[in-house]
Image (cartoon, rainbow, N blue to C red):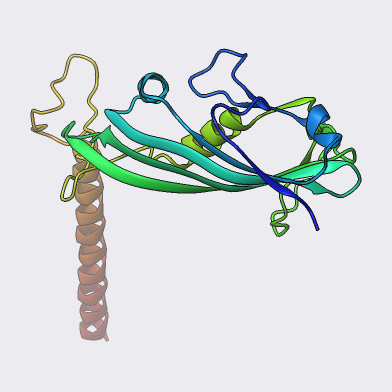
Length: 221
């Protein structure tokens, strides 16, 4: 049975060497020598939460955490499964009022020797299996958490009842808020109506002339 061990912010197998709002490095080479499932629980500090909020334009970020399991997978590969949770607020795109949100983002990554270059991958929209990524020497669990978090953010947060107003466009020099006295195609519509009316009058006149001509022909007989 695979051994389980937990990592935390003070674990020697978790590092923070690279710059970034939230970076947690796991040395996969060291773990390969001691195979087993690794339970990961990493929580962002106050400074990290402020940096993440600034990076993604959030009003507040009260919680940011990743809880996952890193398990040997396939032939010398690894799988990472877990959840990223966050408590945050964004600015409403219309009123700028705070829009609170609780996010829970699933994490499902696979790392193996059979990975291919992304340019050579054929995408199958019906295949829901995660792509196999190349095995790195050091896995940045924090960066993965941020990737999943950014994809789950609402791009257009709105407070309840706020609706986006339609955009009004106008030619240069024209106030879009001022109603146009005449529609640009009004003249064309009027001309079409006149032509249709005149065609009808001509047709009526022709029919009347034909009727009169028929009456004259009968009288002549």
